[in-house]
Length: 250
Image (cartoon, rainbow, N blue to C red; front, side):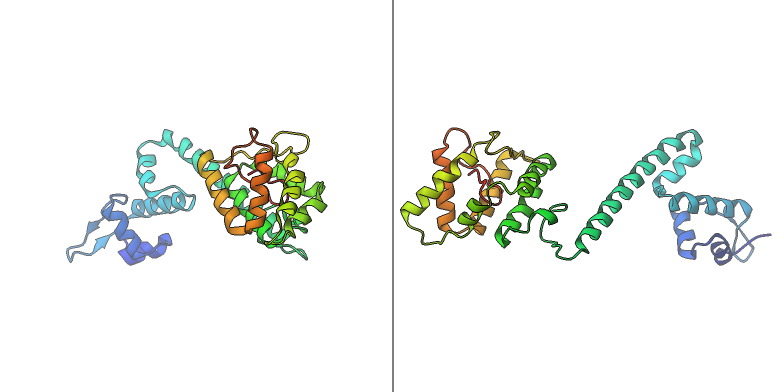
């Protein structure tokens, strides 16, 4: 028994266009033809199509299907690579589901990094924006440390004082606040256990963090940070990045 292109496509669960494409790329054997020129597909063509369909549904690229036909012993590595990719996809989807569950709870916010919803209640809009940028620029380990600090609320009063600083704050007010902030800017100290390690090139991360600070905080706040940095000079580069709240290091 022989089938036409339409019939073999229907039997194999594919389309006429796909069957023709498999011919074009040499993946499917050309069938014989009747005297009138119509193609005649046989059982082995159906088996070829079913095998191609199964492999592609498993994620095997068409470019590898022919190789696997020619070298059955080389199939295992291909399947192992696909399995590893699927495992990574499953993990990513599970993480997304966990985050969606968190965001579905009352009071949850999508404008903070994953996992930070429960510790950012006291942050203001500009702090949350900076936190989002930091999560992109700095390592997971660094952000875990930031998360712990935010959860502990060690300097809530000083945080609020910095956030409430008016843009026209006088010299004495700025200097006094800078002196109180300076001890919190020394990295790897008891007062500031957070060390921000960039994900990529350090200069690019610091430059991006610096631009973010200039965009998100007003002149008086930036002046206080610069003063605090100068007080703790020699411990943090002048282009250093800042953590949302009072533990700024720049």
